[in-house]
Image 1 (tube, rainbow, N blue to C red):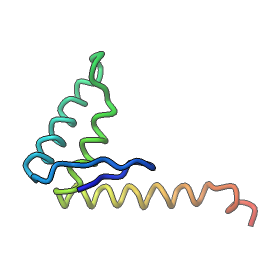
Image 2 (cartoon, helix red, strand yellow):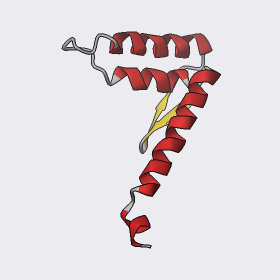
Image 3 (cartoon, rainbow, N blue to C red):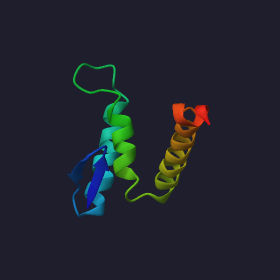
Length: 82
């Protein structure tokens, strides 16, 4: 399986257990984002990895993307000029 972030693609393990473990691990490490080695950037990355296997997280990610693109469309300069 592959996951796309921006223009880059990353391979994920084939094992569902490994993907879920990586996702949960990233989220837990992201909770300690105030520490020097880990960061808060791990939270959304963990949710993105979990979205591959967990339907609830997948739905939330889709809703967020729809909201994000609609909001960007409303505030785009081309839309204001019409």
